[in-house]
Image 1 (cartoon, rainbow, N blue to C red):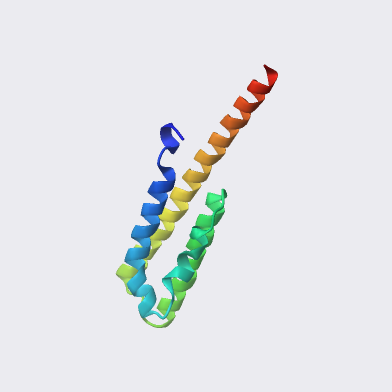
Image 2 (cartoon, rainbow, N blue to C red):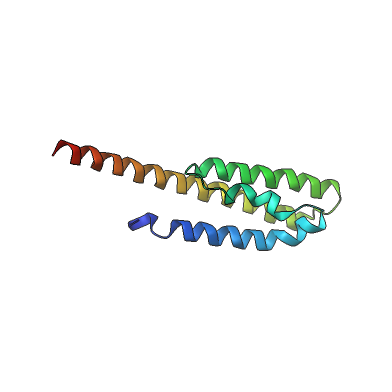
Length: 115
């Protein structure tokens, strides 16, 4: 990969690791397995936006669990909301880059066929 997409997978993996590290303790305290929340992102799929939405939905679900157990402080709620927004933004941007790259590959493939 070149240009804007270079290192995208590494950046997304680093982001996931950072978010998981920050969220692990509050989730464990709420009786939730952090791997269950973030497991959707670990599966290989070219559909980044859908994966991000699934991950964000899990965080919303477990935010409700933590709130129900009285463990969701306003600061933690704000932080989780930021993570959700960040996940959605970065996976949507990643999906757009992936789609643009695939369209470019298809144009090149067609161009080469005409030769």
